[in-house]
Image (spheres, one colour):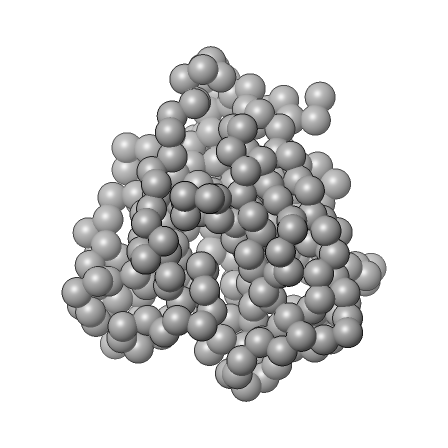
Amino acid sequence: MPNKISRAALLVPLLLLSLNALVVVGIASSQDAPSAHWTYEGEEGPGFWDELAPDYALCGTGRAQSPIDITGEQEVNLADLTLNYQPSALNIFNNGHTIQVNYDQGSTLVYNENEYQLVQFHFHHPSEHTINGEAFDMELHLVHRDANGALAVVGVMLREGEVENPAYAPIFGHLPSEAGEPEATDIRVSAGDLLPESHLYYTYSGSLTTPPCTQGVRWLVLETPVEVLAQQLEAFASIFELNARPVQPLNVRDLLYDGSAGE
């Protein structure tokens, strides 16, 4: 049986990151380039990220890195996630490492009484996190930032299904094959529709999954996957055959599961 711990024990302040430290590729701002070129394979792949630039050192030395294999979690009474997502224009683009959608202002997540603004979402193929050793076809990351610059990322596992999910159709129908700048479209999307009905989640303190692998990121990985069509998975894979960092050691970190959310 999972260990039970009190809610009070969970109210540990998040590590606050400076805004300068958060201006990194694909997470806080799509407009800022990393200090050195990196890839997901070969001599510039994940096993060598820490050697590519001094500010990538945490990719090799950090003890609180992401993603992880989600297993051996402690079941606790976590606070429900409060999501207030508004529709946004489909500001979609290929940033060279993933397909990203910059989200219009005004959508929020409240976790542990702290409010975060949704700034963007993007995809990884296959999933970066695994659950009990199982990888999923893709993973969606919804990236939020609070007033102090701290990040919270909601992870959603995607797997192949037989029924089209209308919320994902506009995104997978407009995947840019070439890297470029974000462009607003007349298409509207709602981040809330991208999530499963159940918001049961796992949580831990981790890092960015791309260089410079900055730590202090609050991860909220939803337990229930969302289904998308095989054609949609194939469309993404034709652009990014592999854009997932391998799982990292948990080390001495709490990995918690919300066994009571929504009850």
